[in-house]
Image 1 (cartoon, rainbow, N blue to C red):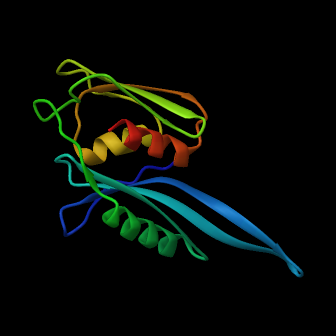
Image 2 (cartoon, rainbow, N blue to C red):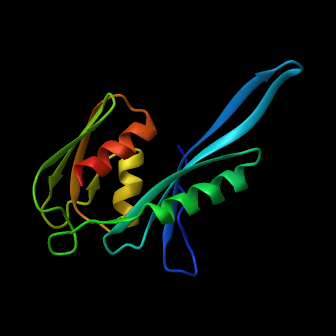
Image 3 (cartoon, rainbow, N blue to C red):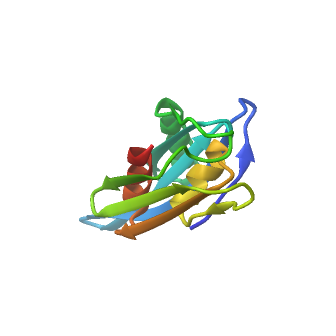
Length: 146
């Protein structure tokens, strides 16, 4: 898992969640391409995620960022720092539990969930994931909880 924190000229922060090498077996051997998952947020309650695939890593990241811009949602936060109440989300075999936290707690979450909270600007939250730790399913379960 690699995390990338870059501010674009549009005011969005994008975070790289996962890069995977995908192989297609053809007659002459294997053809490799790359898939990327990006999370994009404005650090003010808006967040989106996207996936892209290409022969080169930068192209896959660009496609994923474009997809994330199209899939943005707004999440209301209490006092601009945490969620309002405990919520649960499921997608596939992944299950996430999100709890509000007192001020100063920080983001207690791992993997793709941490990238989502940082991109949206949430400062205090406790998150627990059970079941599958597939990044695609964890991200979609987190968005289902919102």
